[in-house]
Image (tube, one colour):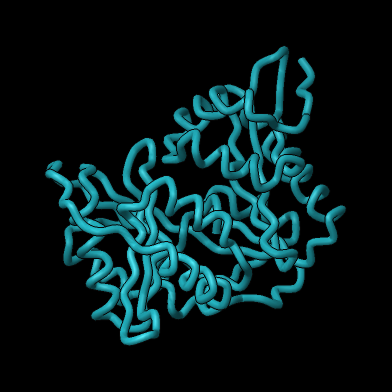
Length: 279
């Protein structure tokens, strides 16, 4: 039976969630809606006889670079080139948009495929996972609207491009996870988070020093009532903070790029990224 590639729509989200569950991933319907709202022409579905068997998604950040994520294939359909064709369709779409650079976070299993498309390594990321007994979430104040706008301006420098719409969506969807630490007028650190299907996810988590990073992770864990928490870390000092809270290593990821990486941002200030699907 032939597999047809087409644009993904909001009506595909329930089936896409089932694919995600089969892969054991953490995304929710809200995450899919973020992709489809940001890039309605750049999300793709593989379909066989009306059944969704694979997906890929893209987001363009300020025309500086684009992100490719959610490359998923149903377990029964793997080994047929569907993942390769979904990635090819995403790359072709972004090439037509004249995006100078494409980025993604690759698992060890997916990395050889991406290398065949010309992606090269930028730096390594480690996912760390906390399993704990559930607890009552503390009642604390949320960040202000001005805090969020100030963070968005700073995040543009650190991430390398404006992703304000995505961060505002996170702050609106999970305001209790929107954390800002100021030292005078300067933002010393910030963190966002999401309620995933399997775990709460900490990130992006930025700090100018380790004391601020510790304050942010402490507060995030107080606000989260989930038994499982994920964080995708860049630096040993951030890993040390997580280990002190009982996190354990889960899996490696490699941030990769294709094209001219002219806006690398300031990853040295990031304790953890937003997540492999969004960057």
